[in-house]
Length: 76
Image 1 (cartoon, one colour):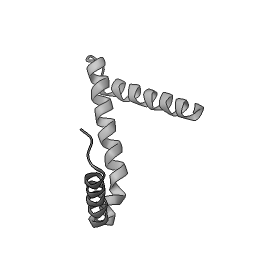
Image 2 (cartoon, rainbow, N blue to C red):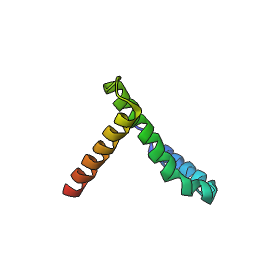
Image 3 (cartoon, rainbow, N blue to C red):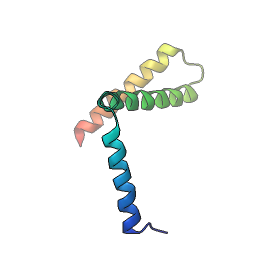
Image 4 (tube, rainbow, N blue to C red):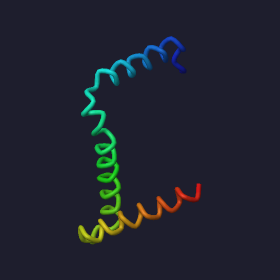
């Protein structure tokens, strides 16, 4: 069941008001926190795929994946 336009608008309005109340320093840190969260999830996935890898090997695999992702992004 799809929300009504009124409900969608109310939800959007609440999100905007919450964003406006967020302190600037928290807004400034949001991208770094998001990156760190995504990095930790990626590292956990690599550790799961390579259970015997050392911490350094996991870091290298992560760096390699980032490089590949950047190269693919350039192609778009």
